[in-house]
Amino acid sequence: METDRTDWRLVLLIWAAGLGAAGQYGKLSVVFDRLPEAYPQAGTSLGFAVSLVGFLGILLGVVAGVLVARIGYRRALLTALCAGAAMSAFQATFPPLWLFLASRVVEGAAHLAIVVAAPTMIAEVTRESDRPLALTIWSTFFAVAFAVLAWAGIPAAARFGLAAVIGAHAVYMAVMAAVLWPILPRVRKGVATPLKQGELLTAHARIYRSPAIGAAAWGWLFYTTCFVAVLTVLAPFLPEGSRALVLGLMPLASLATSMTLGVWLLRRVSAVTVSVAGFAACAVVAVALWAVPGSPVLFLALGATLGLVQGSGFSVVPQLNPTLEDRALANGGMAQAGNLGNTIGTPLMVSVIAVSGYGGLMVMLCLLFLAGAGVHLALQRRRDGQIA
Figure 1 (cartoon, helix red, strand yellow):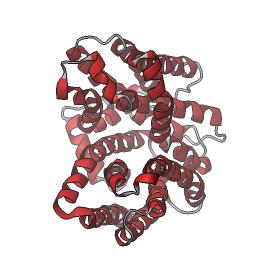
Figure 2 (cartoon, helix red, strand yellow; figure 1 turned 90 degrees about the vertical axis):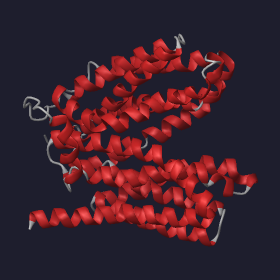
Figure 3 (spheres, one colour; figure 1 turned 60 degrees about the vertical axis):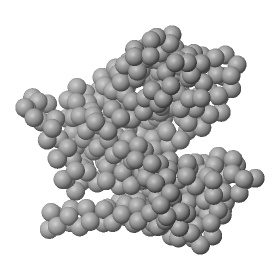
Figure 4 (tube, helix red, strand yellow; figure 1 turned 135 degrees about the vertical axis):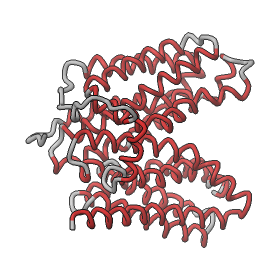
């Protein structure tokens, strides 16, 4: 479906729903040090309170892409918002730990449905010329949500308690469901064929073997492996006096680049080209950081160049996949790849530092950035060969 008008109000409301999805991570991440107040005997098992959502994304990201395409994007998004509200309300009562963790598994399913359905719907309800900007806006949902939660959630937890933060998230998700319910359009579903035996298992092969459906996921894997890890492991190498300021500004530098230069480029060249350029620029900055360790200016430059990859990542999906079903599969692959990258990135970087120090870290970052550019170029050659 090609719409003749972009409803920016609807785009921003779907993006606001995405803030709630990011909040499913952030509501516990930013106040993780206070969780032992609720579960003093839990010990290290409290780590699962955060990671279960991401672990489910690794296992079921592609499955979510298949199922959301079948049940419909409007229904999936609204159901996920309601389920997320219910789980947060339940968690705010601090039930026995095993029930709390079980609710996080359900919440992980809701999170997946949102991050698959929302960008698919945004691409469907915007004009082709407006999609780069709309999907760049969508790509900021995680960073914006974490910034807001760090700014408001930490003091709220200190003043009103941990339950207030989790309960506020429940209210937010419920309000977003109520606001979107009457205005969210019914877009056409993917091809409504019955689920075949073993289809969910073969969906992974369909995505990752396809140079079009899997392209966004492959690029996103290398981006997410680096982004959170860079924020975590490079911090000790920054001057102590400017460390907090630079760490706070880095995500903002990424957002600024994606919303300005990134949008400008996406109106002129393909999203794949912007992603390749972003990865290449990241590799150049990593080399500069190797030569000038701990430079705050270069650290912010790395955030800015990562913004090009962030902003173009979601735009790859509709540019390469004309059908809604393929777009849902591609977004499911991105969800899976993103969770995998976030999970393995920091342990990988910490291990590299332990073995070969700061210089080895810069080499690893360069290799990952060049691999991100290389996988896009290789898949582009495969697509060109199919057309020929």
